[in-house]
Every structure is written in structure tokens, then in C-alpha cells.
Amino acid sequence: MNYLRTAILLAALTALFMGVGYLIGGGSGAVIALIVAAGMNLASYWNADKLVLAMHDAHEVDETTAPELVHLVRDLAHRAGLPMPRVYLMDNPQPNAFATGRNPEHAAVAVTTGLLQMLSREELAGVIAHELAHVKNRDTLTMTITATIAGAISMLAQFGLFFGGHRDNNNGLGVIGTVAMVILAPIAAMLVQMAISRTREYAADEFGARITGRPDALASALAKISAAAQAIENPTAERAPATAHLFIVNPLTGHGMDNLFSTHPSTENRIAALQRLASEIGSGGYGARPTAPAYPRRSAGPWGHSGTRGGNRSPWG
Image (cartoon, rainbow, N blue to C red):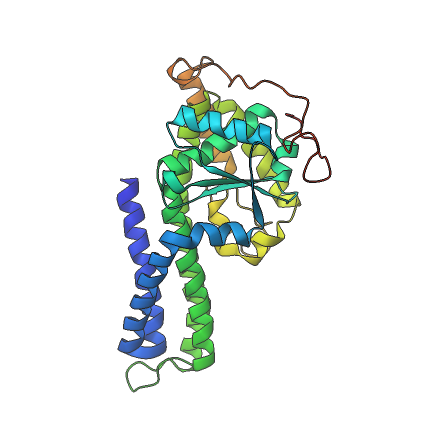
């Protein structure tokens, strides 16, 4: 049912893109918008992950530059039955993470330096398992395409402001109609984007918690990340709000209308669902897994002995 709902919402987003094109250029504008939307979807399939990672200044790390983090991702990917994804680090004080990629064979997981500094090993495992759940459920492609189209709708609406809409006898918008389109089209895109994201977050929380067998650790991580995201600005996310739904917690600070149109379910509801799951699977975890992954503690921090960011140390290093 979630996949059917997501497909319907993606179709609605594409239809909205065509509708804005129609208001700007009539029937020919709608056809052009459809062609552009199809081209964007095709381009997003192959390249959107690279664009998103570059947009957030993420750099790839390996066992040499971030051994603890890479070992953690590898173990959790194995538990989830997934190929090893590429691992990226974002030099950002806000604790957060996202996954991207067109399929599990071409997936990437990106975390911020703030996340490594703030969370315990078990909490970090919960966050990464959540992102791997998005990969397992193939949410990453849908959510990345959604971000691309939603951002394009906003730009197209702004484009319509300059041209004043298609001005034949039947379809002319006039000044009032054009202004209304500029305001309402991005809001409508945001609502569809929000609905797509919210249908997937609860499923990723549950599957991620089952990977580690520690719903309580993921719940604790969500509480920490949510509180910090309201206090620590994420400049790259603020410059690209259409990508906010990719993150495990909304990276926008909540100023203005961000709270009204949040791309994520409330953290309180997600934590409550995880607490219910913890009661269901018990302290032994899911499928007789240990209560926490057996990650050996090492003397080096997540970026190795020398550290690629000035030798910072994390609480779990």
C-alpha cells in the first residue's frame, strides 16, 4: 500500500509540474513541462545521488580515513542483507544523516561530523540502520526524484512570475493569478513531498530498529538529533530546502513555515512507535540478535588516528 501511495503522489507531483507549465504556456507549456519532467526523472535516476552529495559538500571516506564509521556501515549492511554502500562524511556541526542512490547496488550513506560527535555507538548504529532501511526499501530513488521535481516546480513558478502566464483569451492568468501560482504551486509541491516522505519514515524506523535489535537506541538518537537540529543551523540544507526530506530528521531550523510544512512525522510519534516496538521484540532484539552490535572499541576516532578534521574524537571512538 505504501508503494501504491508513493506512486500516486509522484504522479500528482508530475501533474502539478504540468499544470504550472500549462498556466505559463497553455497546452504547449504543459507538453513541454511533461517532456522536462520525464527528462528530469531520467537524469535523476542516473545522477541525482551525485548532485545531492555535492550539494551538501559530502566527501567519500574509506577504511583509511574513517575506519570506525566504515566498519560500522559494513556490519549493518551485512545484517540487512545489502551490498556495502559508499560512505560519505559532511563537515557539518548539525547531527544528521541521509541515504541516496538509485538502487542498493549504487547506494550511499552520508553522515555529518556533528552526528559522530553527539551520538553513542549504539545510537549511531540505529541511525545508519534507518538509512540502510531506506536503501533496502528502495526509497532513496523515489525521494531523490521527489526532491528534484519539487525544486523544479518552485523554479518554474518563479519563472511564471516574470512572464505573467499564457495570455490568450482562455488561459491568461493576469497579475493576481500569476502571483497566486507563484505562492501556491511551491506549497502544493511541498505538501506532496511531505506526504511521500512521511509514508516512508515510520517503515524505515521499524526496519532499522530490527536490524540492530535496539529500538531504544534509535529512539534516543532521534530525540538528540531533533533537539540539536532546532538549535544548530545547517546552511547547506537551508540553501536547498527541497532536499530536507532526505535526512533522518528535518535539517531546517523551523523558522517561518518550516514547522507547518514539515517533511517528517513528529519525533514524538516516531519515538512512541519505537517504544512500542521495543516492548514487542523484547530486550533480546529481533531474530535472536544481540542487544547491541558487538563493535570493538578502538583508540582512534571515526576519522582514524590522525583525523581528517583536525583530529576530532567522537564519543564512540
